Length: 311
Image (cartoon, rainbow, N blue to C red; front, side):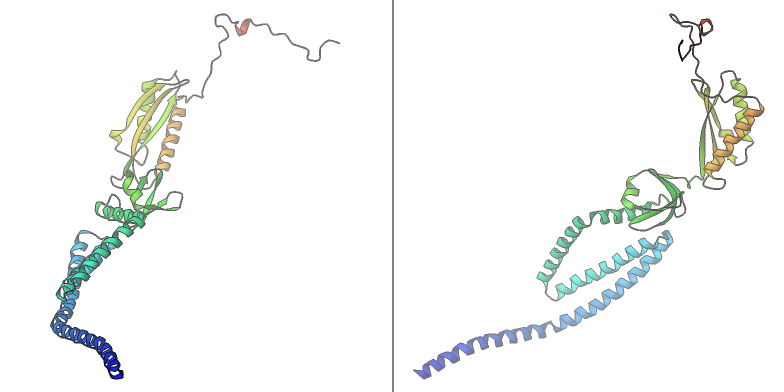
């Protein structure tokens, strides 16, 4: 009986050992069979690393001929480099008969990309907008632009934000998606800007004389350009004046500045009006007590009243 039990125990132990031994032998055989593929994979990895570096260098040379945007250059060169390495990795995994690993890796990349897209959609939107702005180039560094209510000089840009230095001396960091989704006024493209001034003269002045005087004054004002394009138009009969608008052009953004030129124009027109005895009237209100049912002021009797009363 004891011998039978011993044989039974031995068989129970030997069977798992035999299974393990067979598995190890199988793995070893597979490993030996895979040695050529592994060596080929190592060679391919080195080849793809070299190819990725060469393609990156070629791309950088070509890109620098068309653009000097360093941020965009680094972005695309890095993407190309790792894309080539990724292609090489998938080929190597296929050579090693790791098809399931390739499928799992692709699925994992898709899930991770989807999760990151939801988690960082604002960052992704700014990033994509930065790429579009880098290609379209609606403005350059040092350009004076207006973006909504914000106006100033572009000091630097990257793939996330555009930095604008306002005329009040403050730096404002604007997300690129906001830059791309809002109208951009670039004052540095044409390098000219029009100043519109509204002025009023009294009803007693000669309007033709006023027009000639204003045009001659601004024609002789230093800093005014495109003098043949000045526009003078009377706009309305005001409550106490006849109003007109004068539109003229200056170099911009250069010295003198927009505000300085507007101030010089106002002072020059005021001096010219003073010399020609032309009036820029104050608001005037006429009171007429002679309307129907009323009493003229000249006919009204004014009696002094004793505030203390009679004693």
